[in-house]
Image 1 (cartoon, one colour):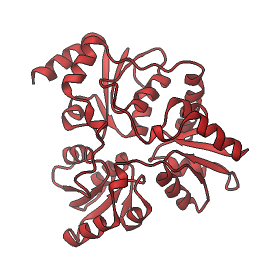
Image 2 (image 1 turned 60 degrees about the vertical axis):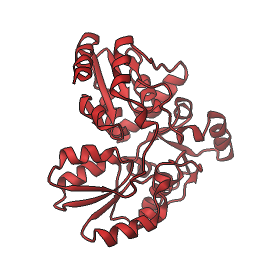
Image 3 (image 1 turned 90 degrees about the horizontal axis):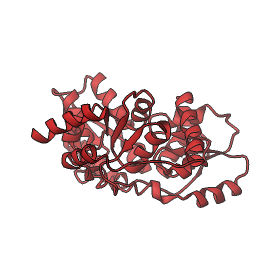
Length: 300
């Protein structure tokens, strides 16, 4: 309790706001001013009037906040909170891919570096990828990076073919169709929700394919009482808080993103106390990346 009180005091002194992703540990979600998925957090970052944003998530998320708020101080409490998927494609690799497909539109998952965003036409999240891709003409060639699973799911929904980069999320890659079958046998009345970063056999076996924000909205509106949750287990904290009368069971209890779990209350306190660790994106990458993010927000 003492740490939480110190954080609240420093937050007022620093004119700071705390944003947390749905995959953060429960105590971070509880102390945050706003918790959400990537799209919700990107939108929130454009509305903030506070001078300081402390981003409890992985590095590309803090980078996105910095791109959208060049005049604010953006902090991330843990420097090593990275994203393996974001590191699976570099700017040089994307330039080479674009050269192989002249005239193609590049949609990049927000789980990407600022350099990759700067080379893309539009960012997407798991919440809006289908809608944004559908906003382009059906004969428009689309390159989708870096997540092959979200890209394939988006293409399937639109009955189109995309040029896919072979990236993936190691946490969602843990899911297997056998886990779906086992969950159905144990909980025949449950709704199985999985994230579109999951492999195709898992998506095909699920009842709902949803972003983490979509899972929260679906659980709130559904009259079902038991849900199997096929994404990083941090989301279950929020689901239980918002639906105390419902049961949420992880599809795989080891679906843990180790990078998301690196931020603790102690590190959040140190971040506010010492104004560390600042995240800044230099020009011209910042302006170029901002354009792709703003295009996403407009098309959403």
